[in-house]
Length: 59
Image 1: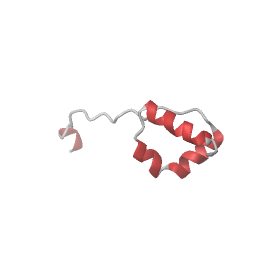
Image 2 (image 1 turned 90 degrees about the vertical axis):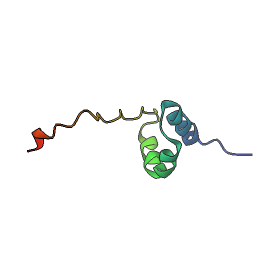
Image 3 (image 1 turned 60 degrees about the horizontal axis):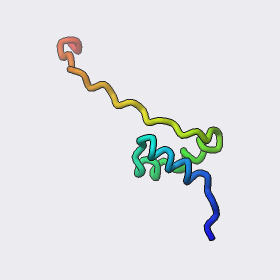
């Protein structure tokens, strides 16, 4: 009989919100620390704005 781990449900909710499961696996220790503080799954960060580059503004 397996013991219920609330962190597993938290990780599954993160996947449902759009996080990559490999990212969750690699960052599990940090996510467990965050889970100890706040058990509400958070949405992923917005993708960066990759607008047109102004090369003259760099001069």
